[in-house]
Length: 355
Ligand SMILES: [Zn+2]
Image (tube, rainbow, N blue to C red; front, side):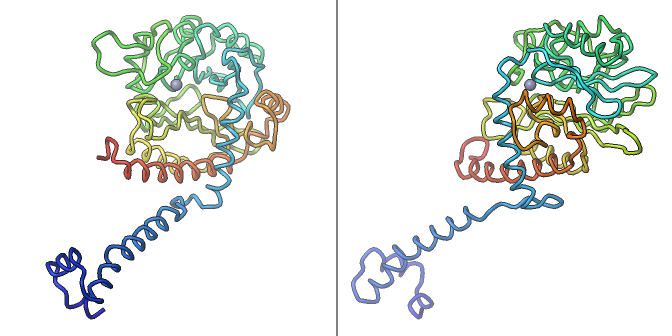
């Protein structure tokens, strides 16, 4: 210890280059061997310290959420053809699933008109219309079509559904250039659609949606949140549905992305991912969680086992499976933990944009 306290930086350097006496050799071992070993051990210990989510999410929820995320990815693989027909059913109260095998399309009804969330593919419009009629409603009573983002599986049928219903089309402001050009911007525009775009009839958007907007149709009220990443301004929807004496908070979100693979989208980065986590905190509690894909539904994930198709059949039989606020909260916690882990790795790698 005495040597360390009395040694100048210059002397250390000299000593290290030319170890001679016993004390010099000891110093050499300390600086060149032991310190790096301790440093590495410290770094390893730090890197192995489990990341815990910030409140109100808990470590236990993150652990449960990890299993939920894995299950979602697993059952997603059961959907071989996203366009396959699916049977419609009540999700809760005045909210219905009316889409195809991949999910995507939901109908919120009222005596003064309905709201359709998502439009499915260009060639699944007939199935969506049939499903709306099967649950007892008319496409012509749809007053607003709210699309989450500009990709074909979500927006492909919008033009035809608008034409058949006369409804107003609404979308996040930055999705509009794509929607009005069939999913692909004109040549020369310098922004790519971010995966999965293109290939559907262009549609005129009647209302641009911004963060904090409220959409009203008769007694229906939908709160709008933009969640950039998967595309420029995916639009999430928060609204209440009533069944019996109980009111459930429904949240439809799309789509969670990690900023460790920029090839998936130009619009995902650390700031947008953090923004989306804050959105998750803002909308709590979420009783019924919907994504644009059925593999993300709280009802599908609130089951111990089964294929995607078996889970869809079960929620059709027992729609109360949708009501479980733990699914969204736990999954959000897990997403936050995984984000922090991925960001730490990304920053350590020195790859752009962190170099
Ligand atoms: Zn998409």
